[in-house]
Length: 388
View (cartoon, rainbow, N blue to C red):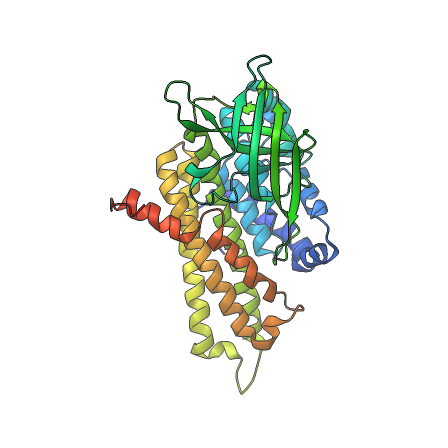
């Protein structure tokens, strides 16, 4: 049951994806993590059913819907215990950027593959010395005037799925010929490009998707590796970052719903005295509060997705930040309360909640910290002065 106001098609999509997720579930996800594999089986089946490209244009093999529908897919898979993190990266961030700003050749080259699951793209923006402050990005691109090629140099960190991605959409900076200032630009860098190397980061998170640090040492790219207009700058960047926030919120909400479902199920049958522990307000009320916060975050996420899909980038920017904040907080609280509800069992591998303690914190930290979201809201929404 959902409190969201959705169309018949959206409800049908939600039910169908939930059924797919139920066929795999948390046990499948845990097995994949334990064996160091990727969720290829689930990814492939989701692709065949049309779920991976539901947000991409129909003329390029997608479903012709929007981020709201892709968020439904991710949330329901997460609620079933088997979220696909690369849904955020490949069809949401990279797919939307290419669909909106890519050349016709780039669209025909990449979008059908992203939609049918045959091609995966990674996304690199964060740098070792440039986390939340994108103005400090030092990855730079310069033209080789003799050939027209681009030469890209720099480094990136915490890039998901580079080992399974055919290419990585890299955020670099080029010099504005008029002002001399650096402006953001996006480049598709093939995995096997000369000078492009990766190192896996050892993360204390149970997830199939691996994190990498990238080094770009004078990587030579053809002129058509540039995605979109060289002068569009931030407009193109935020075409990817708003969906990233919305999809991260969906990711967090799925995780929260899964944890709460496990806790409620346990609280209904676990007896210590005369009645199940769920009859006691010390157990029931925190679970109810967590549910309320999850539902509120779901509504904000739906609002953000609808604004984005309607083409309101400014409105979507504010709502996407709020949705990501609300969902991240709700997720952490839901997972914590679920673990406490199960007591010692909450820390066992059998019940599968303990690993979610670390995973839930990701939604607070990435792709932007809650503190930076609070800065955004205080400055952009409330009009308060900056401290930096």
